[in-house]
Image (cartoon, rainbow, N blue to C red; front, top):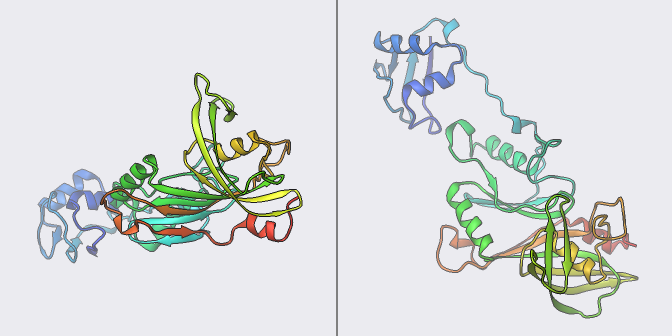
Length: 314
């Protein structure tokens, strides 16, 4: 015999579905038979298979213990690291400062430990999300390269994800980056315009001054924050958001990022000095996340900034 007090997480489910989900060796036919025989009861009374469970209900099963083996739950995301650098969190969204070397989403090699898996583990262990009890899976609304540090926006529910996707697409979330580039910039501040063409097969982009048949316009604004020797520390505001835009655009004007083995002559190095360090919500009109409007969030513990201060570039 086993008994359960139904919690808020299990409330709202059909009785038969809860039972079959809970016990891994209870045959469906036996369950229905025992319900008819009144050996499965809710609040000491006869129940039906489709009866909806309510928080606080007492579910009792007067069956032999060998038929009531509780299913052991295991989730792949529990293999992920617990390490998360949280910039901001509320009931709808979470801003994460992703470290260099961490993937946003799984690939063939790093399937279990990536940022979205860490987010799932964090919310599961906090009791905010359980896979079996929710049709929604915590998701990332944006992504950045594996070897770029910076803020990634996580959605805790479907409404938040829909708003974030819409606002990112309409450019109503301003993103600011820090970058360390080779050479001293000719101007303290400049807005650059060019055209970017992507090679999907090689995961590589090229930038030209004039448009081509398959190119897309890019606009990159930079402000010089500091210099030393032959390095410039820049704040970069993306006015368009294309693949590898900052890395390729800066290389195109002769100021490639330190550590960028793809778009500079530093072959074999893949720790580009780039960090998505700040974002501002600039929503137009009311929406589910309007309470965030005009708020700015900034990451702390920025690796490239610490290296620049310590004169470790060059």
